[in-house]
Length: 374
Image (cartoon, rainbow, N blue to C red; front, side, top):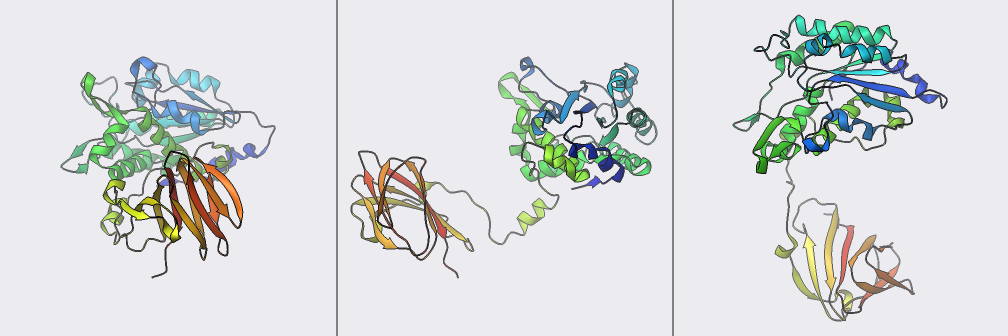
């Protein structure tokens, strides 16, 4: 995770601990990757469109001013920063993400060379926020999905470096969205990452800049995750899980994996067996990943066909049964429990249990227990 911790930023959100504090507003100044879109543009979504879903609206209110096609320069020259500045107040946050359109050298209305003009325009946003007592946060431009011979290309390198340098020089909080989104896309890979962008084959749309709803949601998650790293106090006001993305080392760790991950289908492992522990009737067992080395647990699906059961036996380990389908009569320590789909049963060491299929429908169980020590 590459973020720049700024003590001044943490202090600015200290009021979150005061129940009487007013709602903080989170303003977004940015381009099409952050903008909002109506249903007529589906599946296109901007990450700013999904940001509120991660934040408690009673404490943080998102106001998304991002507009498609704008650079840091054209956004200001069109007067779009002015209404944000008028609304900003002490304690608010301004998220600033440009770069995609600043790089369009063929368009003099938007182009900014990255060494001087681009950071100078970005500094206008920073100054506007600070003058109003709000907290500016710079974001490096989110990665495009551009693969070439199996490698994800960095299309924003000079602009990303300019944002990082500006943040360090001016002591501005930084979320390195280019780094986190690049790591995420590389971990996904070329083909799987397509679903997170605006790809609609039936309309001949193949857009590797703009996101689908899934992609916008993931990028919003990356933004909030790294924002929490800047300000740990924010976590109390985040209402969704932000354990998202992947580290830059993900591919290397996969290559070094001694015990590989895998996918199997139950039809390939099915075994017809009599009822275990002396139980009646016929069952079908699905010993999932039974050959996986070093696995700390056993998980298997077992189908008890009509009249079948698992016989009474004493337990020396923890075991969980989960009923996926059908009905059964479960005996635990001498007490009968009628069970059905959605019921879960935990048996601890020292207990006895048995189960019998009931009715015309197969009883389908998912079973988990610790593996034997090697």
